[in-house]
Amino acid sequence: MKRYLVVLALAAVLVVSAFGCSSTADPKNPDSIQIATGGTGGVYYPLGGGMAKIFQDKLKVSATAQVTGASIENMQLLSKGEVQVAFTQNDILDYAINGKEVFDKKLDKIQAIGAIYPEIVQIVVPADSKIQSIKDLKGKKVSVGAPGSGNEANSRQILEAAGITYDDIKPELKSYADSADSFKDGLIDAMFVTSGIPNSSVQDIAVSQGVRVISIGDDVKAKLKEKYPFYVDESVPKTTYKGQKEDADTVAVLASLAVNSDLSEDFVYKLTQALFDHLDTLAKQNEKGKEIKAEKALEGITVPLHPGAEKYFKEKGIAK
Image 1 (spheres, rainbow, N blue to C red):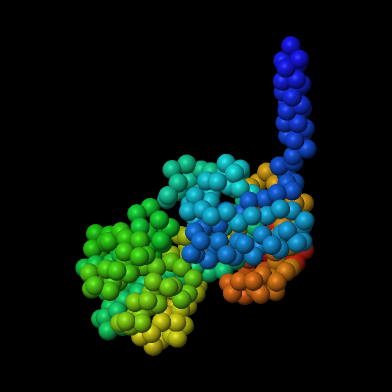
Image 2: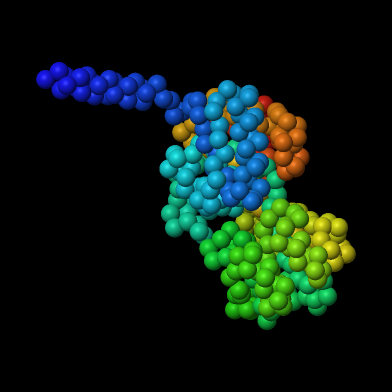
C-alpha cells in the first residue's frame, strides 16, 4: 500500500511538473531557438553558428545552429514550427509561400527577415569552348542540376527567358558533384551552378583544365526579372576561376533568413536588430559575414516581411 502511494505521489509530481513547464513556455517569445541551416560542409551551417552566438550574447537566449538538408527542408521545418529561424534561398522562400515549383502546396507560418548574400547563377563551360552565349547551348549536353532542386529551377527559368526549353538541349539532371565529374571527363558541354563564388567544385575543375562563366545578356536578364522578381543582377569577376579572362554578367538568387510567423513582433525586431547591428562581429567569425549589408537586405525579397523585421528596416530608412 505504501509503495502504491509513493508511486501515486511521484506520478502527481510529474504531472504537475509537465503542466508547469508547458505553462511557462512562450512560443511567441522563446528563451531557446533553433536555426535551420544546411550541411556541415556548406556555408549556411558555420554562418548560422556565428549568428547563434550573436543571439545568445545580445538577446540572452539559447540559440543552436541545426544541421539540415538546406533550403527546401528548412521551409518545411519552419512551417511546422520545429525551428524558429531558417536559412533559405529567396526563390525557394517564394515557392514555399506560394506553393510553386518544388512545393505542391502553400506552406504557412513563414515570413522573411531579409536577404543576406548572393548565390550567383553560373553557366560554366571549358575555357576553350566555342559556347559564348546561352543561345549557343542549343544541341549541347548541359547539366541543369539535381531533379527538383533550386538549381534546376534556376536553370529552367533562365533558359526559358532566353527562349530555350529542355527540348532544345540535351539536359543532364545531376548534382554538383556528379556534374563536376562529368565535366572533367568531357561528358557534358556546360553546367549550371547556383552558389556563392568561388564554388569549390568549379574551382577544382578550373585548376586542372580552366573554365569560363558565360554572360547571360541584358535582354535575357530583363525578361527573367520581369517574370521572376526574386532575381538580382550580379557578376562573376574575371579573377574568380583559372581560365576566365573576362567578367561574366549574370544574375543571383539570395541566401535569406526567414522566421516562423508565430514569433512576436518584439522578439523578431530584437532578433533582426541583434544581427544587423552587429555584422562586424559576424564578419570576424565568418568570412561570408562581410557580404551582408543591411541596406541590401530587402532586395529580391518577394514575400511578406515579419512585422518585427519590417519595424527594424523602417527605423533604418530601408524600404522594401
